[in-house]
Amino acid sequence: MSMKLPMASSLHNLPSLVSFLGNAQRIVFLTGAGMSTESGIADFRSTTGLYAGGVDKSVFDIEVFDRDPAYFYRFARTFLDTIRQARPNAGHFAVAALATEFRKDVCVCTQNIDALHQEAGISAVFPLHGTLQTFHCRKCREPVESRPIWSAVAAGEIPQHGGCGGILKPDIVFFGEPLPQDVYAAAETAVRQADLLIVAGTSLAVYPAAALPACRTDACRLVIINRDSTPLDFQANLVFHESIGSVLQGAVDRLRKT
Ligand code: OAD
Image 1: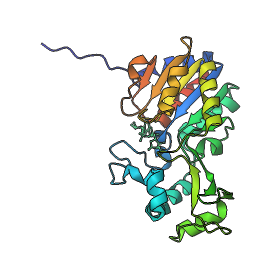
Image 2: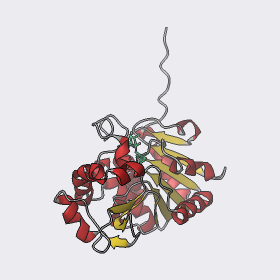
Image 3: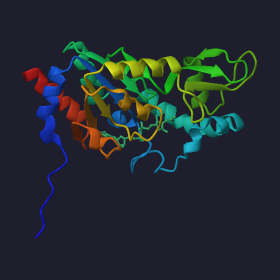
């Protein structure tokens, strides 16, 4: 005779999430690429992600970039265009609603470079892996605004600094580069002060971002919303192996009715 194990968790846990959200004052989100798949941007490590689709991890390696920037820019031509055309999805709007509508103290620590959280209307965002808003020159280090560079990249060019001719690189964090220290420190402080930490759409495979949940206090509840299981599922108060959009929008809709 066999016995079915109870499901670890699922949408039947939505009422508990609604209660956590209702009771929390300081809510921190740690988000990753899965936050934006419902906006049409592929993630990295799931079965439909960039790596499974043949993109090599070295495309974001700083040594490879400095040796052969064309390798990154060939990939970036479509990748950056997809990001530029993407719009926030139900999950991004639900996160923003918690701050704007429910007056929660919400901040988002994100590994994403797409700025979709900000576009959805939330300003307290810590972009752990940098931003596409600016580039800098690898030779003279001068920062350069991104807008004029997009069309060059889209046309298949490798953007160069108008003054010194050095190669321009977007200010996103490549493997082999440090994270922006002030941003990471602010994220750590936010997690330490949180009473609810929601990890959404990240495999928690990349450090130091994956270490942030360890900064939470014992009083902080941990919720994980991720299609695939993560190394922290066993520590979480609630785990949803579901779509972020449906979980967060579902929770916020229910919160509106309480
Ligand atoms: P990953 O691709 O490693 O993980 C994304 C996770 O999101 C996967 O575990 C999916 O199961 C889950 N997921 C995808 N769509 C989802 C959805 N709609 N609802 C719920 N879950 C969903 O992405 P990250 O953890 O963000 O770094 O990757 C971390 C870093 O690795 C990235 O910032 C990038 C990458 O290499 C650099 O490029 C430096």
